[in-house]
Image 1 (cartoon, rainbow, N blue to C red):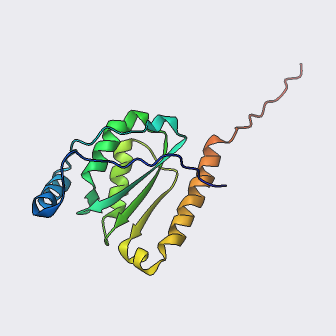
Image 2: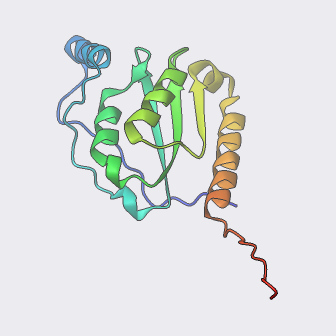
Image 3: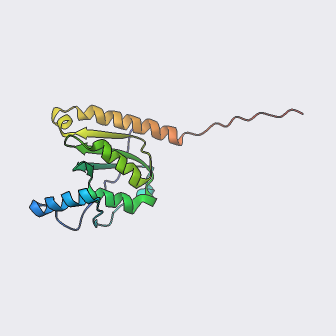
Length: 153
């Protein structure tokens, strides 16, 4: 089994995050759980069986543009899987925030650290993430056998 992907949606913003002011804005939005204005998404997630949502951790919180995306697309989201990257902490908290904002339990989820990427061990984690996603998806869509007893009179 393989995951097929025909679209990658980058959550774009209307304002710039570069420099000291951009960093300060990112810090403020993370601390206050703000949902900034994002560019209109190009893809309708309801067209897909599964959407993998990937986000970095910002100051132990979900990146504010992703917060906006999940809130905006909440009613259009199908089955989900969550992938989070972190510098060293906050990933599990972000997974919880993603579950709460999407109002969904993911089929699969993983947190990958910068250190794991540097060492190259993240590949194994991604493989396990995909294997779990495939298995849980198959389980979710498998036909259900209903047993019935014939009543003899």
